[in-house]
Image 1 (cartoon, rainbow, N blue to C red):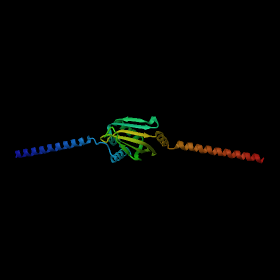
Image 2: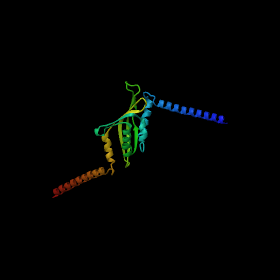
Image 3: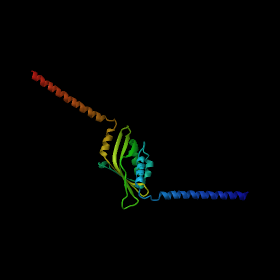
Image 4: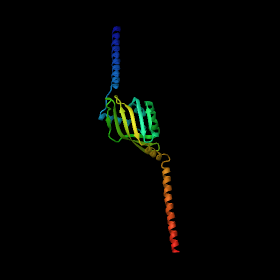
Length: 223
């Protein structure tokens, strides 16, 4: 009985070792596939990757943690506008995560990214693995007081050989955005309503003065 029990134990240990080896080999194969260069992207891949980018930065709230998986470790971001004060440069995933939290979560109730133009993609002649995609996009923001703001712009994304974003370039009209945001300030619209009311009052007062002057002139003629 002892030798039978020992044989069973040896068989179980052998099977366990084989299973462990199989799992280790499987993980190694998966990791090897993750590190395998995928090469330049084609038109279908470009459209899918851009759609993935837009969905990653849309939400109520935006999932900033999950969005980081779209980028390479050496990611660089350039936000440029017609107002240099609103231009911004970011590098590394930590800074992008903090920017996402501040701009897309803390300041707004919800954010939606929309690609509203054709996606153009190309690979630089100097590389067969790096690809760039350019497209027009609109970002819709819902403020904490439920006011809607839209931000149109042009985006260019550079993908490395692993189809991760290594460079994000964005150009937008900061002045238009700030004008919309100022109108959404609390209390909503009070300054605009006050200005409009004063203008109307001024117009009424002017018309009243003109009528009184006309009536006075008519009275003088009768005399």
